[in-house]
Length: 131
Image (cartoon, rainbow, N blue to C red):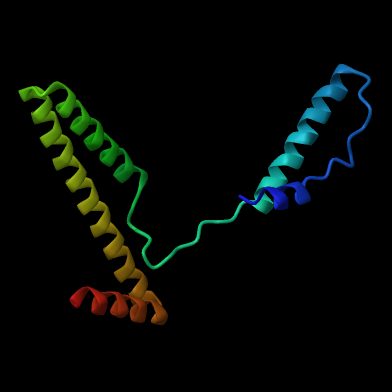
């Protein structure tokens, strides 16, 4: 986030003097809307890069975090139960990632069948995987 751009987008010109309790509520809502609009204008949108993992979902993040926590527990406790929990968490992480990769691939193939440009992006992707 660019703090200077955020400051430029903030404009508190419409703030009125507060005389009643209803004015307080109205001005709080007004300030909240101004700040939300400034954030919307100044925070950049997500940019998809060639190295971005298009298949990655929150489910993948949760499975990865669970595997990391299980690994830390096993290193700390060094018990058979913690080792079994680590193996189960890693197995679940692999399953989730494979499932989301497969779904993303099938989605890309479906899109490629509908759009002429997508087929060439898919061909370029496949060519890169072959090497």
